[in-house]
Image (cartoon, rainbow over all chains, first blue to last red; front, side, top):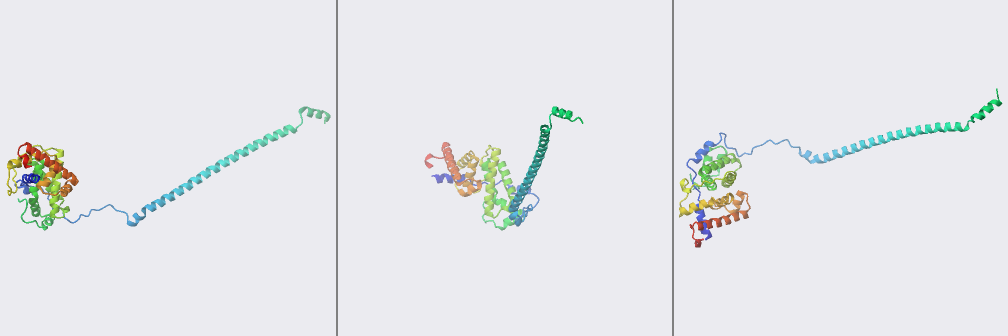
Length: 130
Length: 187
């Protein structure tokens, strides 16, 4: 019974004729140039890297990156050492200055301790009037 | 204007059409125009829109002739493009005006007993299905393609094709019974 209904459907849906002159009207609308040929069209592609370049491209880029990283690291280390040396020199200068000041103070203290008091000095001057 | 040429077309016809032979291309068009026009007519329900669609399909074919591998591929390609283009047109602008089949279209073969009333009603009811279901039913019952071919043409899994057919048959049958065009005991 299902098959019978499907057969009815097939009969109802038989293809119909296209309108008269369909093909002729279509041909008038075709573009002037001939139909595309079957031969494959060679489309110029953008220049691609050579096979060897493609094969070694990534390792080369990695190596270049590593070299650049090492050079940058060295530069950074040298710069840091220079800064440390400058800081050391400044500290040394400050220490020498401090030692000089201390030495002067000690000299002054020594002289103050070892020189006689003013009264003793005047008595001595009286005993030796020359 | 034969729909199914008695003599199979020679493969050289495709080569000649590719080389720009307008006569060869016209022969290919005449061999398939009925099928493509029928898909358009039953999908869009309007003769003028069906002719526009058929012309669009064949103009696309003219531009893509280089991609067609064989005459078999040509038939498959034309039906696929016609069905999908019709679904696309229906999405953009639904065609609701239905013209009765006998007013302008002539059924190609007269070799089976006909019931014009039932045929007309079936065609009308088919137009009420969703565009996808309509395309599946046309490719199955008008073009006689198998389920896997229909799936390939409409980019649809075979199980979806099956369920479209099952649901559409049930819908059409119940509406035919409702219209008293089919006896319940006959189905």
